[in-house]
Amino acid sequence: MKKCPYCRIEVGGNLNKCPLCQSRLTGEGGEAYFPVRDTLKFRSFLYKLQTFIVWSVIVVALGLDFLFSIEIPTYPGLHWSLLIVMWLMVFEYVILRQFVPGTGSARKVTIMVFVILAMLLVTAHYLEFMWLAWDWIVPVVITGAMIANFVLALLDRYGNTMIYLLSGLACVLVPCLIQFFRHVPMSITWTICMIVSVILIVGAVIFKGRAVAAELERRFTL
Image 1 (tube, rainbow, N blue to C red):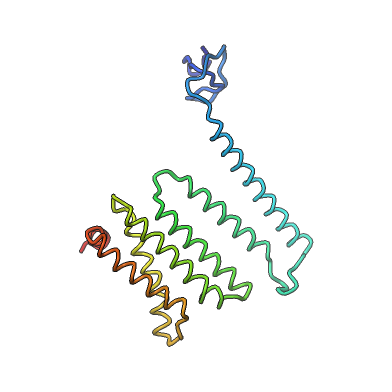
Image 2 (cartoon, rainbow, N blue to C red):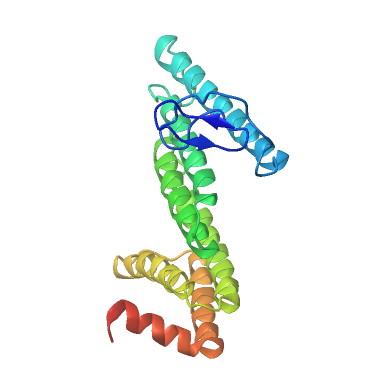
């Protein structure tokens, strides 16, 4: 059995470091207490590999942009490497969110959609395709996220998903109201998004009326 010379404890199994002070253990180890899971090791290797690839791409992009001043012909003066860094950081954030314990699927979907859409609008501003992003991509993605949250709300037994479905409705109403009061013609995609969101909320009230009322009461103390 291995021993820690600092904590003066005996540690069974085949650990190399003390579980208390992380010092190297002395003595002969025994059989492992827990089986080795090759699947976890493989997933850990894949995560480290993609992290290495991401940071390699970041370093190369920053070097080509700032050291060699390589520009995109259509966008002179644009530091395109910063957009790449931004998207790769979002990519890493989304991956990390998938492994956060105790986080529901609806929350992951909602946060992922909000972060990606925010980065998309920033990119659209600098690459000058804001009309495409705002009139088509944003409403289509929000509609898909609301449909996913509606399905998750129907399957949820604990009432933890309804808030994300209701927040999706707010994300649709606010842009539509802004366009309405500014007398900006609403695109067909935003109109469809509004109709779908209202249908989903009506469906949530029909199928999960108590959950909707409980969520509103909990959030707004009605």
